[in-house]
Length: 173
Ligand code: SF4
Image 1 (cartoon, rainbow, N blue to C red):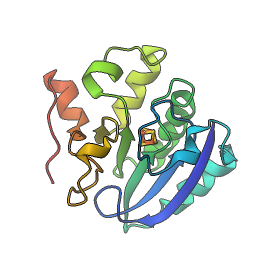
Image 2: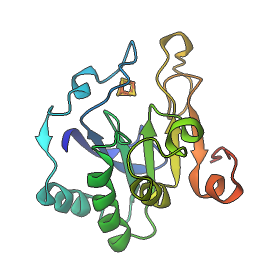
Image 3: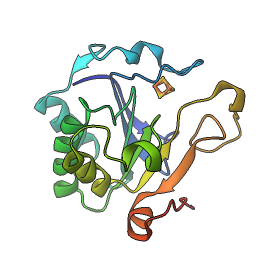
Image 4: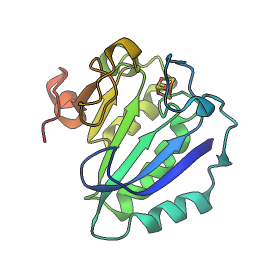
């Protein structure tokens, strides 16, 4: 996997001050995408153990509330195993930091159906997530007043509550 950008002290992509990782590779090709260069799976830098160690260090301060995964597309089948390996490390070192992810796929129609690669990897990925912001960016539904999302079709999903109830439960601050 490659990654496009890392943002330390990010306040735009989840609650509190966070570390954000923008992975490379996205097949959605939403018109008006904010990060078109990251559609290419080879864009940016290789995601190595050194990258993970650097991110773990950035996550260390108490004022960092958590990690956010964006793209590109974290749920592309070829990206998931690398992200899961990283999240295993994050959770073992920082069990109380929150983990958010943004995806152009739909939680119920795409991700939970197991069509994005081996289900055991997707299932483990979901087990680490607190919130998933799902759905593609739709230019006609763009709304700059929305918190943590670009268009009104996108949902802020409480992942643990949704997995437990078997229904989509929205996240509330
Ligand atoms: S899912 Fe995100 S990164 Fe991918 S094309 Fe849509 S807006 Fe861009």
